[in-house]
Length: 181
Image (cartoon, rainbow, N blue to C red):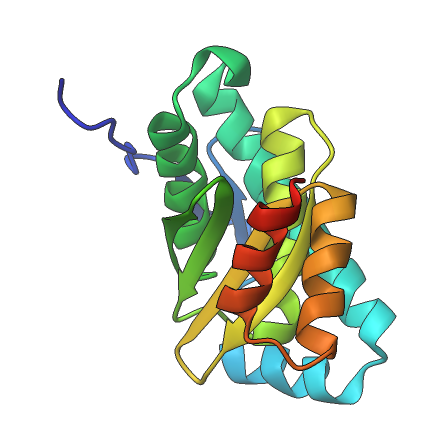
């Protein structure tokens, strides 16, 4: 079986005569914003505002991916993530891939706009595309890569507590598996 693909043809429409940018699914208008401006905003704004912006960006990604996916329950994880990753790339929020840590799902975001927005973007995208509530926590980040755990509220809270108590994020996930989620 061949890997699913993301068809980027017509994913973004530039209407220069009317000065607008739109996604191929829906009539939402977009604004091309330098990443540096988003990073500056994320540094200066209250955490709640940064999270709200991240959720709005993620929800748009998820809704556009859902239109491509159709029935999320009938798709494989690979098909689902491929469409989300394609929409995220078109939106300019990085290259998404999946790491499996036992039963834990970790989304890796390479070259994303801001690590503080990674978890809200990923969580809202998955929730909007799947129609199922999810919780997320930023596990790690550096200037190029962020790792976001996607799970239930309970599991995310346990991992947060483990990290806050001094465990590495990998050990916190391992401990989560040992306790059951």
